[in-house]
Amino acid sequence: MKKIFGCLFFILLLAGCGVTNEKSQGEDAGEKLVTKEGTYVGLADTHTIEVTVDHEPVSFDITEESADDVKNLNNGEKVTVKYQKNSKGQLVLKDIEPAN
Image (cartoon, rainbow, N blue to C red):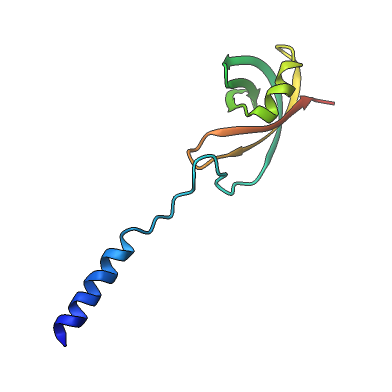
């Protein structure tokens, strides 16, 4: 009887090792949407823009949805950005538009 309980305990222990708490790639980390005003600096590379926010340069990853908004901006233009931090700690641009 002890062998059966021992084996059962060992099997349950191993089964618990396969459980993961990580989020799938591309899934938001559940962070709230942040809105800030700043100055559009320009493209840092093909998928990243830089915006000066609170007197500091900040890089944002652009998505397919936000890429069209970026095309219409000029360097030095005042903008409002909406972004979220993903599970990897990257700032993902959700929306950018000229500031009022």
